[in-house]
Length: 76
Image 1: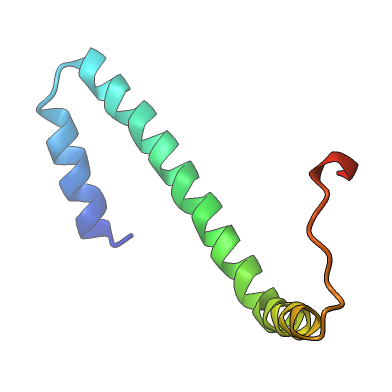
Image 2: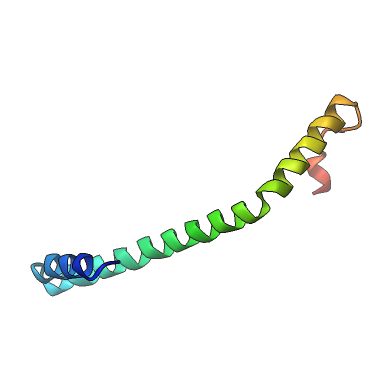
């Protein structure tokens, strides 16, 4: 984040009472944690996307060839 953006957020928070500042900090922590999780997911997905495409093609081919069986959720 640019220092200008940080300064803007700091000024916005300074105008709030201290108890509300704490609430904002907690919301920001949760929001940033969610963003980091999403970023990790996106990076993981990009790394495995070609493998997922290959697996999907193989599954589609097996279905077309009659080699696939319905999933037995009781065996999971």
